[in-house]
Length: 437
Ligand SMILES: [Zn+2]
Image 1 (cartoon, rainbow, N blue to C red):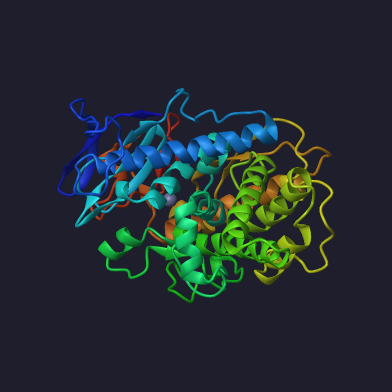
Image 2: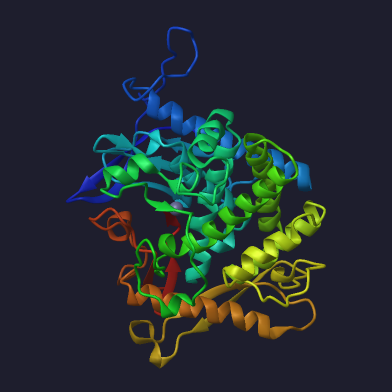
């Protein structure tokens, strides 16, 4: 990790570039360390974001090393990820593969860098992009939503590793996460409040059940799912929250005190989360059903099968697994791939509206036993997602071969999820932007 601040350059509200800010550095306090009490110290946000990202990455590496002997290798090829905590004034934080790092911004009375949860969430995008770069090439709604949920799950597990935070959580919930919304379930409370959303930007304490994103409106509300990736992600983070809750309940039933029960549940869920990613496809698409199967497979492979029934009960309730599904003897969701994934091109049909005739490329697993139908499911998921993106106005249609940041970022602070641009052969081609919030 390297602390490397950059300042965003805005023209008419659009982010058009990032310039180096070499003067930025943290100054140690009187004790010679980099621990600051609160945001009244100008170093606080930078130290907080950098520290939270470092702790998240280190913990992930530790668990990954224990399970597999491997370490994270960043998708952008550098040895270190860059953290820019003071990138300007904007209601945002983002990971961008082309900038090789994470960017945080001040907004009103707060900063996204001041939130450990937001920092861990953004680190999660970079970690998942390292482990499964295909997922950021994918266009499927569930793949994008899994990227968002992954960061929220990581953030919850980081909280459960912090003794003081868990003590506060026990006081808030009487030690049972199912009682009420709380500091673990709610993401980015200060940032949410600055945006006018009480109780954080979203919560994992919810009762959502699976519905095909294509059948949902773009945006839901507290009690209804939408298909936009952050919105739909609440289904997966909600299911994961239930797994944490049920493991913690089981720990208490076995005689542990509430604090120890929660912290032990957190440690166990680290293995499940990291293991789940290890067993996931290397394709450009995944689905929540696959991830549910991969979570039980991770339990079987990395956790002695201790929570197979518990996970299954949660996933059945969430509509992510069949009640009569057999316990997995292998990673069912991993699609039995036996080789490195391959790229497959296809052209969208005349019924695809603005996307008619557009060329797309999906990364598909090479099926082990001639199971070509599985390849088709990846492409179907990608095509469905691209159509939804276009319907929601998240695809930039441009004549430029290489659209710049000023084209990709919109003045409301969001960015297009994909663009369609002419390629060297004059074909219109679909590209995913590798920027996530
Ligand atoms: Zn995100």
